[in-house]
Length: 409
Image (cartoon, rainbow, N blue to C red; front, side, top):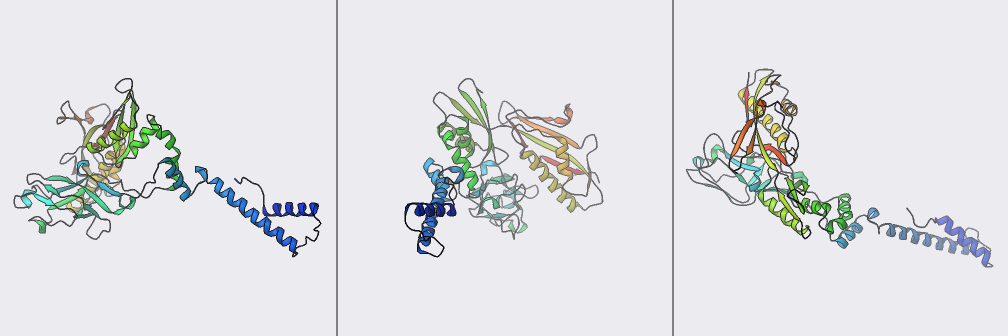
């Protein structure tokens, strides 16, 4: 909104009236010298007022644009977020090398370990332009069949964010059975932390919250600080969880499971925002694994290769549904059934009308961290639906075959 409500015509009229009333100059007709001077002064005055209005309005964050927004950020110590590369650390359990068939890494490399070298390219296909690279030399131990690696995209920004099961090709040939392509790669979860340069609207929002954030010890300060850590997706704050002066922060990562390294980084950030006498504890959600057994019926006779392709799509669909569930979000059987049936119109049915899943199990940690108990949900009154606790997160159980699919025809 303009500060000064003066148009060019109004300014020219005011000057003309004042000269006429206070001087002996009377020839004010268009084309005369006096009128030319009045027009020039009015035009320059109007331009000056307009420039002042524009600059004055930009002195407020809501009206600032471009560099002016950056000035506010500099003043409050809030840098604009730049582009970042999509990446996944090996500890997050996302990108996995495995052996085709029932062998081990040693059986496809003359009994020795395999060392996947830094710079190895991983992509959706041999001709794909979406490329990731291995970021560190990784040893695939001879006696194992699966191992996770660290990767990052070569393309910056969100264009490199990918869904589950997208990365299926690698160019690594440093093992004895390379001609048989017996070393397989895939991503068991989406990689979604590639970030574009921050939009102006989002940057202005963060700047507007900086005064509260800089006060420390309040919820906004803690939330913004924690969410600024790369790899963070969301968090839940539970006040007084361990008594007066304490609060717990349950964090959600962009990967299904929260890596220990992320907990440590977020804890350090929270500590810097916590007031004296208060204690904030950052922790993972209680991670409860799920596994499934499914029987599919088809509308027509299909080859084994086609069935295996459908199995892969159904597995990915069910994995993606479970892994992206929020902390405390329910697993709904009907939603899982719909995700599976939608992957291919040649699927006629799944299980039976009364029991679409042959089995749905949850895996819960016991008192010992390396001990888990398996419980079938179909034996409970919920008939397969599962409502986790407020600090519990469901994900696909990291076992060799968490989703088993068989065919009825």
